Length: 532
Image (cartoon, rainbow, N blue to C red; front, top):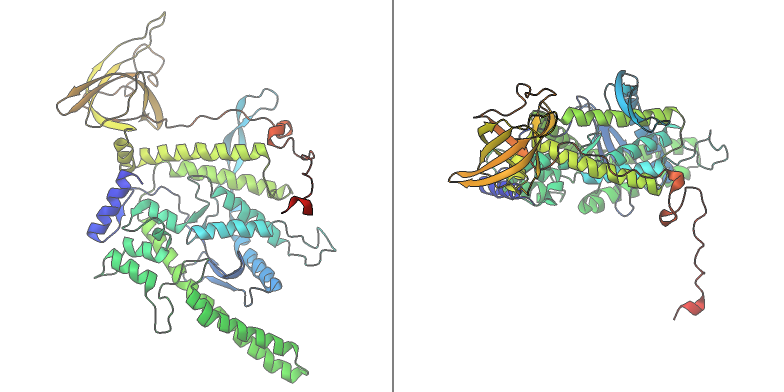
């Protein structure tokens, strides 16, 4: 936990209300996001019980599995989920625009710019908490390998074609959620806790009701009081007034309401199967429908408060202005969406169960690079985040007190002005260390020359080394002027690419060898003599 975050949490405890941890919104929010509030059954990982899904806050679509142990009903639920999600995704796949992207020329190996098709926007999926993201990944993994009747006419339980297609999209969204700064799939609890510091722990922030209670408590209550009520308060039937944000359910709900309702549903279904004539079957069919309606009402009862809380949290986030670099990161999300759309249209197979060594290394390097880029961009967009970096000695701000023009040595001298900055910060500067400032959206580099203490801080002398034009005199505005307030960082604003990795077919034997090659010989089988 950083010092700024700790101070924010202490201030939240003192005032009884969450404190801003950011002055701008650091993630993109779509004008029409798809909200998914999933619910799973206790005792079996990933067994769906129901969900609320949709883009209209006043008219969500309710999906329910009356008997989660019945795989046919679970598969029907997944087909309904595909019917709700895929049209939303397809609505963004058709509208495109021309854009430039950088690719590697296969002949020369150089990076060149080519014109490509880019989707004008991308679908955004919002889930209540981090557990929802894990469930999306789990559903994607379980759905994308389902066989359809077209693929295998003899498969015992063929899936509708839309089910494995949705599995591929959910897998892509789940993988993209692991990329720092991505906004295709967002957990609202992570989003809110990034922008507000509450008086509770990070683990407690995963309770959506308690988190919103700190950020926007009811009149006459402090954040701590409202959060305690959201976590523990129950009605006369012993049910939570603020049900969990999913995908898990409350044990009291499972034991007192859900289990008896499912048991009545099972009895009604068994009785219907044992009916001997049509008249008797009609009566028992009505009883089965009533039992199913009861389960649907129970699922809606525990998911609707979370659904309303998600939209309430989105309203709070929309009140914040968007950060300057958010659109740039959303453009990378659009490229990701467009690339997966093209792979689906080209008929490529689904994502593998396990990445090969080169692909896994590429993903890890990309996530590390995006994390460093996100940290830098959030600091450049937000003075409150930059203050955290300043306290850590990774940046400093101050007033320019002197500018002395100097030039490099050589046949063609270039401007190398010396800039003196008075600052109260204490940056961790080493000899000839490089520092950076944002100049028109691009990083300008300077070199640390000297340090001199003064009564109100310190004087730091820097040598500007680039972004001054090609002439003998610097271009106007490229050199700080006396009296100007400047901010320099010790971290780079743009991240460089890592080491080049081999092609998959040249994977070394230490990492499993090329894909498709036989693996190492299995160990000798364990026999009775090997055990005591």
